[in-house]
Image (cartoon, rainbow, N blue to C red; front, side, top):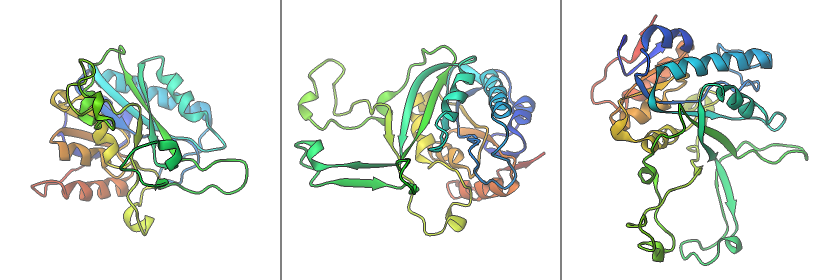
Length: 284
């Protein structure tokens, strides 16, 4: 280890990984890079030419592969816009040169379920519509209620702690029906409903234009296995939600963020979960 853990370093992630991280010392990577769909960041241009963007993403993939352990997991959250659905998969195909795509998880931000489609579930009394989404006007596109989480590993054979994020059986008669169903808990599957918290002001409560909730990295880390996770990396730290998840789980982390404003907010947010008010921000 060439640096202090539990810090956000204000620098480019490629420079940071090359300077501070040794081969194979990271157990889990959870991150959400820019999507190149025109999001307005403070310091980053999210409208660069597509090939240049994909080349850059592939450089990030190669460096992440170097620092990730052979039994590590890389959870890459990446979205799209209705006019351009290909971005996530074009990035995934660049990563395919360097990783195995072990799982594809759908992060559901909002969902509507009608009572008649649910069947006889006593806890569901009527139609359900939960979560948050940005309404899309016009008549061409549906409201966009999900993003991808690509789970990459080096060899495609990393064992996961599936029940760490498991859910109870709705039909309790399934318990004991087969050897693996020994308790009231089953694999959640690859669709995760994780809503954003309701906010009144984006400027005050969500100053970063594109973030995932802390529960998303928390679930990723739990799925990989808390007991075998020593260090978590977020190359695009943003407002620090991966760091918050690690702090809650008692796991060391390191993050890189080019925008000092976002990094300072991350520092303050993570401090709320720390027993000691120590500095988390590293300036290079």
